[in-house]
Image 1 (cartoon, rainbow, N blue to C red):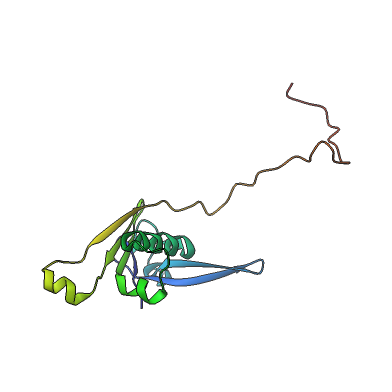
Image 2: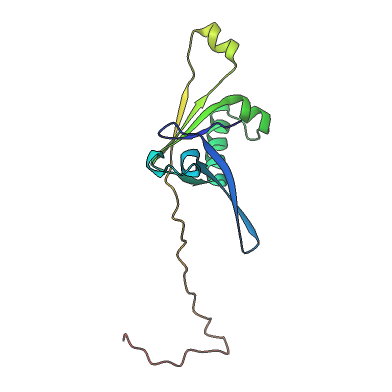
Length: 141
């Protein structure tokens, strides 16, 4: 049951990519999958684990509970909209409670930014006690 959408209203579909034996899960805009890149939202592809963690943490904080089952999370989320700088989580509290109070669904806005797809690699020099020491001349005194 798809509840994740880009900021142009396109449903985002779960997908995964296998790289070096590791599976990476993402949500990708349906229009991108259909070959319509002009119609996708501002963020056409997002890492699934990050989005799921942010949404679950926000629901957990709102409900003031440390542990939540998958069914409780599903019951409280009607829709998640992925924007460039925010995630908007539309809560679907118990429909009977909302009708009784005359309220509409509440929205939780979560600040976020998509991480870069390429992670910078830091080169760590060996410890001085290493048997392999750098014997190159220092070019930057």
